[in-house]
Amino acid sequence: MTRTKNISLVIILFLPFTLFGCSLGAKKDTVKNKSTISVKTEFEEQPSVDLHFDEYSIIFGFSNETGKNILAISDTLPEPGIYKKTISDNGDLIPIDFVKQKTGVEDKDYQLTYYNFSNCGGYLFECSDGIVNYKKSVVMLSDKFLSNRKYIKNVSKEKNPLGTDVLEQIKILKHKEIKNSFPLVKIDNNRSLYIVNFEIVNDTAMFSFVLVSPNKLVTKDNIAEFDPYGTWRVDDGGVVNPEMFDILAVFESKFGIEIAINWIGAEGDYIEYLIENGNQLEMGKNEYRYTLPN
Image (tube, rainbow, N blue to C red; front, side):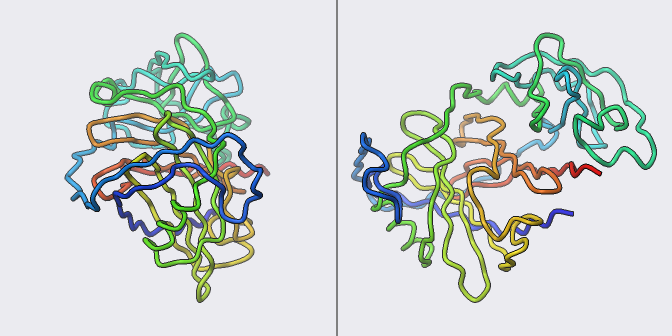
């Protein structure tokens, strides 16, 4: 089974910096047209607040091969009929309907994936207009969830590396040497999400999700004992890279950016819902689905 060992330590720092430049150790000609953003502000920390996050307002699932039918990962949903929307294969919000509780086939229902969908049981939903990407985990949303959040559809892959000055500030902030960094997703012209890997110290590995905006860094740290055969996930080789993650959805609320991120492992998918909260990128909920084939 997947071993995910996370300790979250999130710090927010206001400072002047250039958003994009050469990444640590990258060739000088990696990015020819760099966007530079400089902001002058005082150092400041914001306290976190009680989010009153309703973990049942958003759920995760997986679909059959047609992308038309979806099963929820959770086997306990107090009100399955409240989930009215999902995100289609082209990024649109589309309607869904709760159908029934499906009975699984004993000893064959543990692989929660499209090729074993017929054997799986759980809360069954149907897309009434459109389909989802059957190869990815799926989010399903209640009206309550969408009533106080804006869905950000037009996110894209970030191509610009972190600037050397931003990396230096992260290094100072974390008191660790940086091994490398990778862009994950461009949310809009001012905000992007990155991965930063730090050098291993005393067999302790650490990487951070770093949400970057013109005057703000928000980081979520993930710490584990280094194992070359599986530090973060089974058979990961002790490496974290962009290919291990799918961004399922991005929203914006009064608290800031919220991201549903799928962490792909050799044996399954670990899904986190992360919420920007003052000086924290807080985990609202998480779920796991086993996908390893026979």
